[in-house]
Structure formats: structure tokens, C-alpha cells
Length: 326
Ligand code: XMP
Image 1 (cartoon, protein in one colour):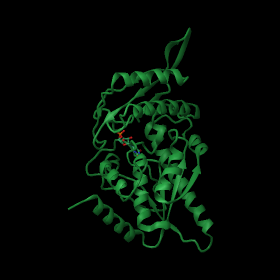
Image 2 (cartoon, helix red, strand yellow):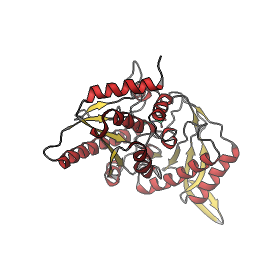
Image 3 (cartoon, protein in one colour):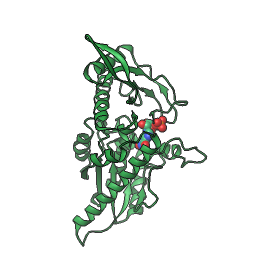
Image 4 (spheres, protein in one colour):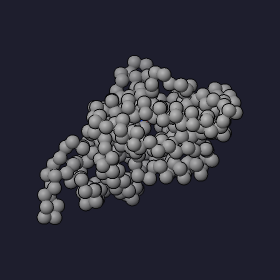
């Protein structure tokens, strides 16, 4: 009989077998998947694991603090944070194609990790052992949707599958590769991770970079971050977090429409709310959010986020839409 406890035990044993007494680094994204993968590997090999959190500037508000504070408190894991905002924005400059964005973000991720691994080794000095393994929170649906499963078309290059460079210098450790999200959450709770991490709604590795339709710039990121933060606050206040799978907020950065506020004409950008209900993200239905919640989100975003003068609702299921717009 498969219980969550037995999944944990079997996975921990398999990780010990794979890594032995060597060293690993783990890419923490701030999301559930990489947090659970890291906690599993930490249980298996303790301080042979170092977690690396890259602040690529595509994060939502509060995410860096959550990783630095809550995750470390729950696991005791060793964490290095790398500030790479400028590097990612430079690499994304002028890029509008979704797949190109994903590939660039995936590539930069790996390059930053490789540098982090080299730095960690240099720190350890001559006695420091090589870091051979890279832990990733790849789930079963990521593998399938990137064309890695049997017979599936490549729909999107998930940053941690299709975006890996050919000359990757690490052996991958992917303890969640056979699991769906609900199983991952159960494993996380079994490992003692806090609810704030385990029941966090999914957030894609490429972050806000694939929720800005058009070029990614620091200014657009600030706009989207503000709108996203309002939507999340209101959904949480309405007690809806556990009813929806996730609610991406998408900035249509190249679209403008005319509005009016006070006595003045505005010519701002629309954002799209994309609330979805799902079991595993392979299919999804658009969530029928209560009108009063939609109204509060819309009123607050248009009042508080200066570049946004229109809030729209995406009422498309998956298929035919995907959850993220890019
Ligand atoms: P789509 O847009 O393909 O999204 O319907 C399905 C689920 O996967 C998340 N997603 C990602 N997660 N790296 C991730 O870790 C990615 O590159 C990525 N792209 C999409 C998305 O938020 C949804 O939950």
C-alpha cells in the first residue's frame, strides 16, 4: 500500500543511493515543487545540500522574504541568495516571443547555478568536494507538457525541462518527477513544511516574465507586481485560496485603451485575471469567482496601479487555452 510516508521513505532512500556522500545544490524558485524537492533531499543528505535562490527580478512581491525566512526556518537548510535581476533583464531585453523568453530564462537560471556552484566550491577551498548534482522540482505534468512524456506534443518549454542547455555540467536529481501536485503537497506536509509554503498556489519558474505579454522591463514588472499583489490579497481575504488552483494576473503591456478617471482621460494598459480550477493543471476550468470579489479587485487595481485602467476576466478553459498566457 502506497502512503505518503512510504513515498517519502522510498524517495529519501533513492536520493541517498543516487548522491551517496557527494554534494548537491538545489534550485529554489519559491514555489511548492522546488521547496518539497529540497526538503526531501535535505532529509536524505543533510548539509551535503546547499540551496540556491536566484532573485531574477521576475518574482511576485514578498517571495524572496518568504524563502529566506519561512523555508529556512522550517528546514534548517543552508541557503545562498543570488541577486541576478540586472542579468535577467538584460538577457530579456527586446524579447517578446514566449518560447524565446522561456528558453532565455531557463538558460540564465542554469548559468547562474553553475556560477553559484563554482563559488561554493571555491569557498570550500582545496578541500572542498565537487558539486555534482542539481536538484530540481520537476513534476510529472512538466515532463509531459514539455514533450518528455510518451507521445505528447511540445506545448511549452517548462523552464526546468525544455530550457536546459545541452552542455549541463550537473547530474539531475528530480525526486518529484513521477508525482502530481496534490501528491507533492502531501509529501511537503509529511516533511513538516508550513502550510504557507505547501498550499501556495503554483507559480511558474519563468515567473512574471511570461505574464507580461510583450517585452519584459523593470517598469512593467513593477506594474504587474502591484496588480498581482492586490488580486492575491483580495482572494485571500475572501477565503478563496483553497478553492482556486491559481489566478495569474497578466499584463497586456503592448495594448492600450482609453479610460477616464476623475476629470481626466487615461490611456493605460489592461490586466487580465485568469482564475482557474484544476486537479493537476493538465486541464482546467475557469473559476466562477463571486462578482463582489471581482469588483473589489478591479476597483483596487485601477485605483492603486497607475498604469492600469482596465481589468478583464479570462473565461477560457484548458483546453483550448493554457493556464499561463505564454
Ligand atoms: P500551462 O500554462 O501550461 O500551465 O497550462 C500549467 C501549470 O504549470 C505552471 N507552469 C510552469 N511551472 N515552470 C513551472 O515550474 C514553467 O515553466 C511553467 N509554465 C507553466 C502554470 O503556472 C500552471 O500551474
